[in-house]
Length: 114
Image (tube, rainbow, N blue to C red; front, side):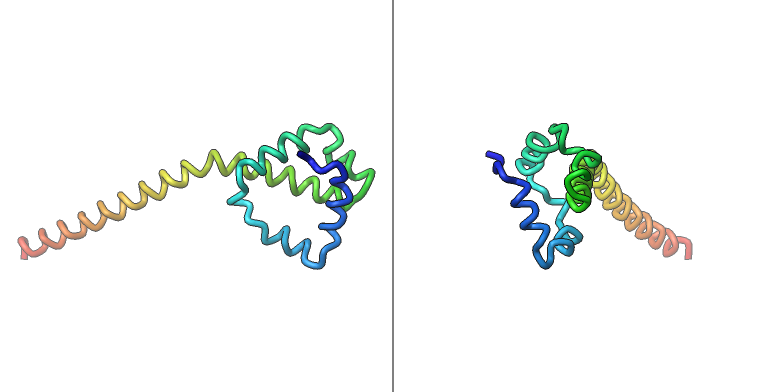
């Protein structure tokens, strides 16, 4: 269940010494799906969780709102791109194997010709 006083909790986190460094180093590639679902269900659908509306309460909160929305967009794109990256890695692996095979055959051919 969503904490009722989330703004108080958010202010507490934003006031921590290494808060900004934590945002910069946040592992955006491994956000658990349940966390993304909670963000989408509890915040992104809320009409008050829009940067222009949040800014009226706090400029810092606007930045955090933008960051959360950007992470959600990143996660959506990453889900589309991940299988394509995996396919590209597999194609690269096969290409390198074929190239090695070609180089072996070319070396054999050179021995036969010479």
